[in-house]
Image (cartoon, rainbow, N blue to C red):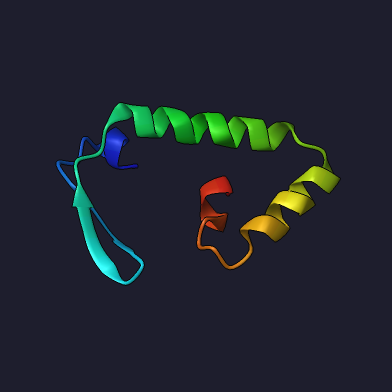
Length: 63
């Protein structure tokens, strides 16, 4: 989203600490690749990934 908006900064929290950085297109490219590969998985494999990612905060990245 930040790359598409051409935002100057992205702010988030990592392990309870504030994190700020400039977004860059490579991040968006990698996220898109991860989403595409996840979409190709069958239901059992997706369930396995969901179990591994449960409660990590990463779940929305695959939505």
